[in-house]
Picture 1 (spheres, rainbow, N blue to C red):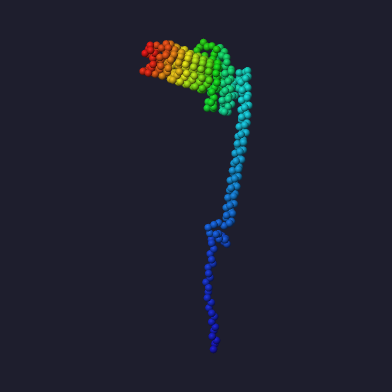
Picture 2 (cartoon, helix red, strand yellow):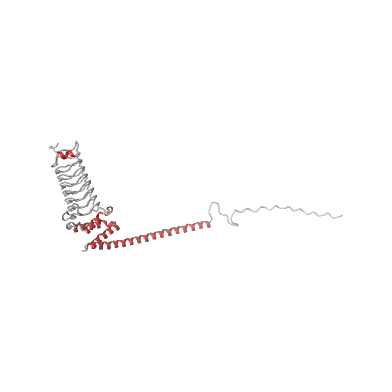
Length: 351
């Protein structure tokens, strides 16, 4: 018999288990703790923050240094400018004392330039020029001549300045003689040319402005107490609230002038032209208006106590509410040519 074959045992195949999955990312990278950052990331963020703070601090420090340097440069420039202005001012004032006219004129215009360059010095320079006018205009001009050129130049600088920089300045021209010694044959000969000048609140107490051209000038609030303004041209000037007490305005042209609230008590206005003038609320007690032209003037509510009206032209004058009881030399014909109303108070002899 043949031997029975030996059967080998069958081996089972084992199915391999799948390898565990790793989290996505770099191969072999460690898994970060859930809900936080790893230490490397934290160190990186802190480094960036510190670098940013250092950069900001550097920029701030650089800005401070730049501002300080710029301020120092500005201070140095301002100091240098002040020194230059002081030197220019000293030289200009020195020129005012020279004998030659052209040198004095140069000093006056140099002061004008300094006044424009340094507005805070305007009041000082204006006072210097006003003093120059007062001390040099002590003699009347030569026969048939206007005021000297240097006086004219100083007045021009003063009256054309920018008054916004005055800082309370009030020009002092008291007693200045700006007239001619005697009239030229033709009326209206040249005097001080101040047409359109800004002379607000100027002190012209007892000054002499005969034949002066003040047409369109602003003299509101000015002090002209006792001033002589004979034959002066004051057409369309503003004399509102000015003091003309005891002033002499004889033969002056005051047509269409603003005289609102002006003090003209005891003023002399022989043959003055006041046609169309605004005299509302003016003080006219004891003023002399003999021969004056008041045609079309506004005298509403004005007290004419003691006012001399001999041969005064009142044609078309507004006398509504005016007090004429104390007026002197007033005639019926004058009243008939004027405008009166029920409130006009008339002298007993004419009521």
